[in-house]
Length: 147
Image (cartoon, rainbow, N blue to C red; front, side, top):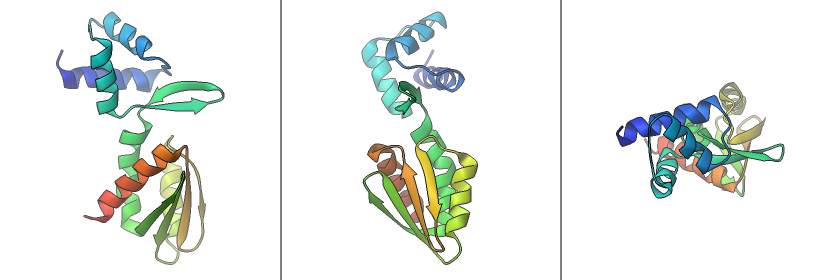
């Protein structure tokens, strides 16, 4: 099994169940006939973009940041002309009346990296799960703003 196939298998595992430890991913891979070292698995998880999500006192791996973010970042960039970050909160600036449209995009996608939004007339506050998530969402939107 090559690297990209292994990455897809790991993504499938993460989508299907809440896995909280690397060793559990490694054991699931072995059950599928794939043997990897801990170093290789750590690198795979980093390359895939997995993050730990904390919910109700439990943590688990999620594809949240990398995959979900791209879905709506491009859409948001159609409306936002500026993004600013303060800790784990993003402020998206848009033309008058478009902040609610951006909030609707986020609400429809329900990315796990974002906890919620507050829309004004031309400003959208986006409350992210943590600073890392906010930075990654900001970077992604800015990437599409530059296009």
